[in-house]
Image (cartoon, rainbow, N blue to C red; front, side, top):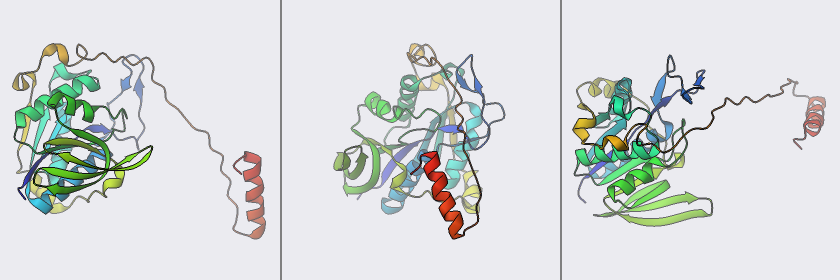
Amino acid sequence: MKPLHIIVCVKPVPDFRSPVEFDQKTKTVKRGNVATVINPLDKNALEAALQLKESFGGKVTALSMAPPFAESVLREVLAFGADEAFLLSDPAFAGSDTLATAYVLAQGVKKIRDFDLVITGAASTDGNTAQVGPQVAEHLGLPHASFVTQVKRHSEHSLELTLKTEEGTILAEIDLPALITVSREINEPRTLGLFGIAAAAAKPLHILGSSDLEVDPERVGEKGSPTRIADIREVSFARKSELHEGTPEAISLLVKKFREWGVI
């Protein structure tokens, strides 16, 4: 079978393992000193692309819309094994909601051209809308499938997919070119190696702005974003904790406590 050119959409997100503050005026995360990481499900998307490349040959291209600081995140993606990266970055893109973001990403895909498959994570940890992937597909006129848990090459021009839904598991076939979004269950992302880190420095990373992508200024940023966030809140959970030794008496006491707390 012919090699595949796969584009992986990658989103830099705040590392929520560290304290995060919100700007109540703009209803956004205060990026300030918050570390930025690869969106976890986008790591699964990248791993799926790399496995297909290892099986059938081809090329993996990373694509991201983000501020300039995201260049370090894309270098990490290159270190994992992607061959080339494109960062779509422009002040005009600031404030984009999912619709505007998907439009910019679709313009980026058109700029790259000659692809067989686009893969994204099903959702991001900072927004969790699960909308961008399908919206990109609609902009590009591609068949698409979401929450994919397994992908296999079915033929020269199609893939066999397993999808996880609320109703159960679906087996499907999709013609290429196509777009899929993947769930965590699809794979276990590989770890970063020293060889990959060293090789990443020599791989091409292109930064494109609005003029390079020929975007309509009315469809990007706040102008192109009909979504408005009404409120944003921090939620905290109060948890009770007690430590008991592992004796029969302790087990009886634990069961009693569970009943008091309404757990059992």
